[in-house]
Length: 345
Length: 166
Image (tube, rainbow over all chains, first blue to last red; front, side):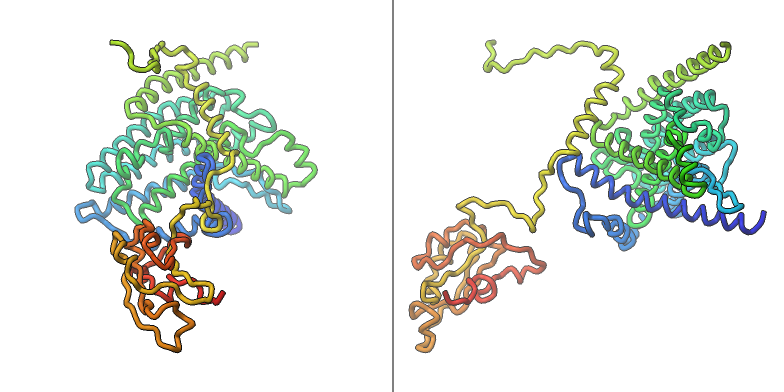
């Protein structure tokens, strides 16, 4: 373990962390602009040209507001909740391959912070942990409505994790590996996994909407039903952390979907580009393609929010347990059958 | 009982067929409708750079008018203050000095004329009541301000037309 390896990883982690924060910040801006355009109006356009500095204004507002901690709340847990939400949101970015390894001279720099050979399981574990951030926030607020909302959020999260895990099992049958690097490398060129697992992708994207508490599954935090939901009692930076963690979660979910099903940094014609542009530029083009896919997914998240009405709680549970889970199991069985039949011939 | 209008519609609730139960085609249609709005022109008006046209009868900010010789028309008769339903107008009358003959039309004028814009309801009764055709409500929307006292518009501050001789 030489020092250059440590420095390399450190720089990569810093860059990825910075990029995910900036993308989450401008996701808030994009959310407002996309929401506005879908509703026949302009979004924020006063803070800087076309409102580009609006996230900075929002961040400044978050810093400047007064921090209120309710007297009867559990002070330690009150502070841990947003921190945990932010932590689990950020560490999800560690295993995603952001591009092909860059070859600079004699060094080969992989654009992935760590290639755990159970990468998919790691992502799944991190997503499960994010339930705790919401649950602790609701409990520590000492507020009946926050608690109700946190309970709803937790039950929604664990219900949709089941279908998500099962769809990942079907994906595992196709890819034969849990390592994200291997999964992306197997999707070279045109062979994206969505072509092999369309039902699995549909299940995964519906469960992603539910895991990130994003409309139409946003009952935990809808303003009209439960006031603020689990973040009612939070103010200033802690609230900022909760809201930010939601956007980082959206970013990580999009990245995971793009990596697992849409080929990550692969695109048709990448071999030609590799020959033309050389071993330093071509991986960066792959990274740009990955980010284009991620932004397309984020736009899709926002597009769906303003299209579909919110689920009622019992409809949500019905969908999670009685529709998606059997579908996911059926998906696993069908995938297994198809693979067995194909292998026979 | 006979139906009162001819708008009665019999509701038929058929059970959903498979495509409808999947919700996916309906989702697709909804998404198409939403995205079509993305590409349409927005209905927002970028106030204050762009302002909507007002009607002919628009009643905005007050202005005390002058006659063709540049003399102030207002003679502080108090009819506008009397007719104001919100009691927004107050004034103090003064006698015209000989050297001020070019400033005021008659011997009586308003040395202090104040309208409290927060009380004013822009009804236009002062405009109708004025016998000298001195006050008109033809200005723009009253601009926003921070303090209550800044909304009491005095004579030289904002109520008057610009002191430019015509």
